[in-house]
Amino acid sequence: MNHVARSPKRPVNLTLSEDVVREARLLTRNLSETVETLLADYVEAERARHVDRERRIENTIDAAIAHYEEFGIIGAEHSPI
Image 1: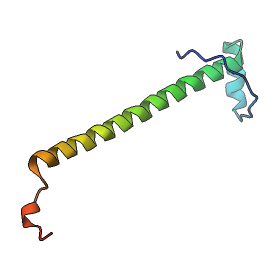
Image 2: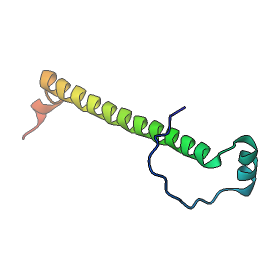
Image 3: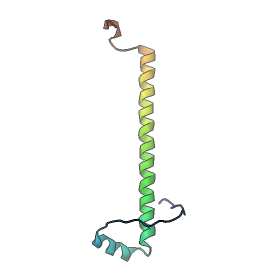
Image 4: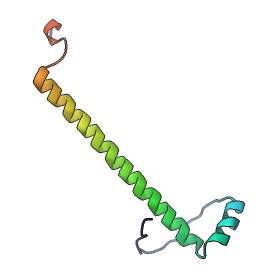
């Protein structure tokens, strides 16, 4: 589980299911901290997913460039350009 950085806090408005909040309060002493930890984990996972996607795109581009440099463009010999 992600360790939530201790930065300044600010109030936010959330609309949550009453049933879920009622049950969550039975399971945790500090609902705000629990939600903050879960949200921090989500942000970390989404950031990692974004970085991985960008890395895969860059790898694909690099592979395409390497292929072009080694073999040229398919069908180029038939192009009037």
